Length: 339
Ligand SMILES: [Fe+2]
View 1 (cartoon, helix red, strand yellow):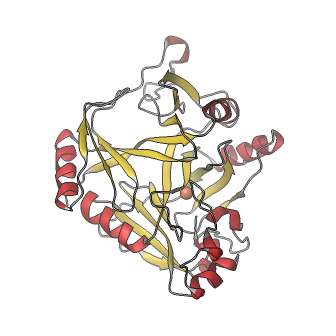
View 2 (tube, rainbow, N blue to C red):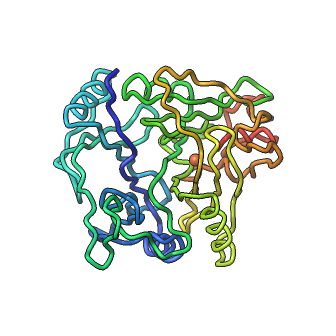
């Protein structure tokens, strides 16, 4: 298939308290506010090539309001839209929004709102923020935690294989890996990519009744040292580490996870391999092989299975979950497979 999507462009997330979340992202995490309209706050990392990568939208619960992906060309946008419609999903064309042009918006088969766009405004820094290096959209931030740019989003779905297949067949994502539990043949995780990164779209199994949930959003720093310093500074300033710092087996990124004030989980990554293999065949890992924790020595906390909006009774108590599933999800070692 012709390459349709180039990269993850921006994420819109809902926050019950937009001000509290904005303060966190700006003051603690080192992003910058570039725009505010209709109670939405538009934030950028210093290295984002387009104007912003995160939009905080007022909402009752933390959730993924929409994920926006940039196509490889204007023609690819048309092709992607027609492929989606041919699959039986009807979206709609919009005239665009703040710093992006005509877009195709639809809700994927597992309930995730998406926007596909070609025209995005490249960021032009004001004089005081302009870099001395031609390729940098802005000076490197002086904030000790500041991520360079948006990295990926990991959503939740009732059917990991079905999700991977639909996004692969219709939008050309390469499926890079799966994780099945050690205890039972249950697929709990997969990673997909539009480019050479190990993933820019992750997906975890969701046993709740709520479709279209998100597990975490993720940003990037250049080095492992940057990541460790962020962990240090966040800890000292009242933001605990939910999991990590450590290294994922799948993708081999350094990682850490924490929560922002709305409870939404944020990940920070550095490192990891690049994969250019056009006919890559996804391996299926077991958690015991280190899919989530490369060193195989740190169980993922149960809290990491929580997706957003939060669902009552998620995991083991969920009605309808098989006995096998309940047992697997109750075993904290088993849930190492997600990440
Ligand atoms: Fe992730």
